[in-house]
Length: 222
Image (cartoon, rainbow, N blue to C red):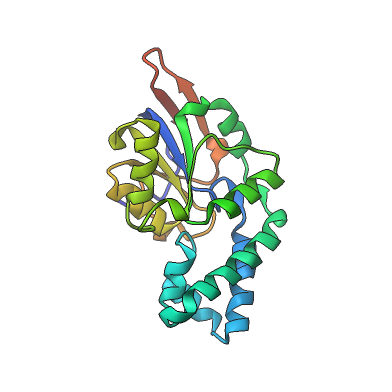
């Protein structure tokens, strides 16, 4: 179903899997600037980027739909270089720091389509550390394939059905659903009509976690 509101809800899970860009960190502007600069350098119409849907996907997979295979590695390295240079312009989204601080550190992970180096660079510039990170190089298939979320669940030792995916992109939410996980959408980078999830909210300040007596996490939403 497509969720269009932030109606109050309680989701009970054992672990939370966060996307990074557009979910925890406001880096969408940085991503768009970097890709737009690369497209200009490559002589591509920026509209081609929107057509392939580059947000929330691994860089080399996106470029593979735009350029010949022989050019993918060099182009991906250039996009990474541009994004690393722009990383300090990122900031935390509302509610992100408070929610992460309230969650037990062994019960959450960051699952991102970016490389580990870029994700950690963005976190370090904001003074944050991540207990577990699954990045682009940790999987063979990117979103909307569920591999990244399933990898995170396995590393946490939590059954997929007991995980909640928090995402802002159609590809990421599709990956969470394909993994058999609950999904919570943030309308930070896409129109709500593009997002399919169990629940939708505006930002993470609408999520309050409680640790139940049996150790499960009750997330009060709305």
